[in-house]
Image 1 (cartoon, rainbow, N blue to C red):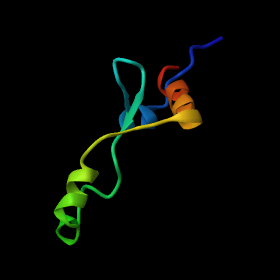
Image 2 (cartoon, one colour):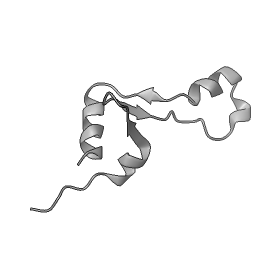
Image 3 (cartoon, rainbow, N blue to C red):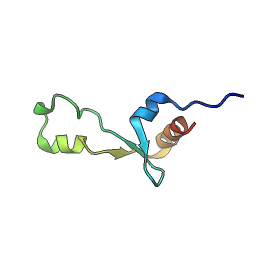
Length: 64
């Protein structure tokens, strides 16, 4: 049986922390920033963690 391949799109979008949690970037933080206030821009540039069932699915896609 051949090896399982990891999902390349998921590998580019998600990273794992040293404790095994899944990090992701927030959307809407790359362009049209002049319309958004400074507080919102700062928040959009922070990374977020995935939780629950979605994190389990992404972990399976990355570590195949």
